[in-house]
Length: 157
Image 1 (tube, rainbow, N blue to C red):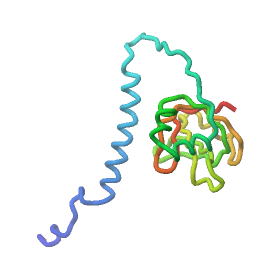
Image 2 (cartoon, helix red, strand yellow):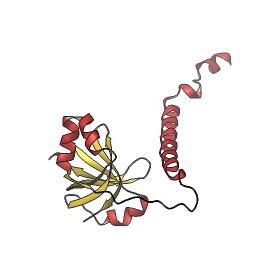
Image 3 (cartoon, rainbow, N blue to C red):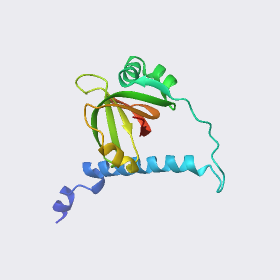
Image 4 (cartoon, rainbow, N blue to C red):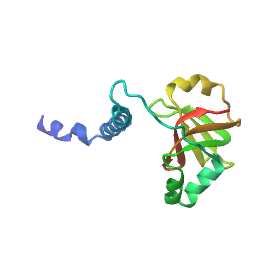
């Protein structure tokens, strides 16, 4: 009986346990950062933001800038509103069920700008198709492994 218990792995030594932990922590991190930015307002206090001017750029230019020098591209684009145009490479949902559209930055669709949308935008995204020319607007959050990420997007045309 002792030999059987010794051969059983403890739950924290199983690979799937750590995958679940990482996903839960990522989900908590996303929701807590949104609540922190919204939590700075007192109830009844209005947001007084002046409209920001969007940087107009193509998906190819945005990706090429990040590929050439990520530090310089972050200084120019990160946290700023961009109006990015290009060819739709794919339309889908990520692991957290967040809808997105990729704009191709190369002919093979390996390099792209990934624009993240809210779940309420699913109807608008359902009307888009792969290969369509489109202009999207959102806030650049930097480069991930292979994509430049743009959050809080909306379809301009």
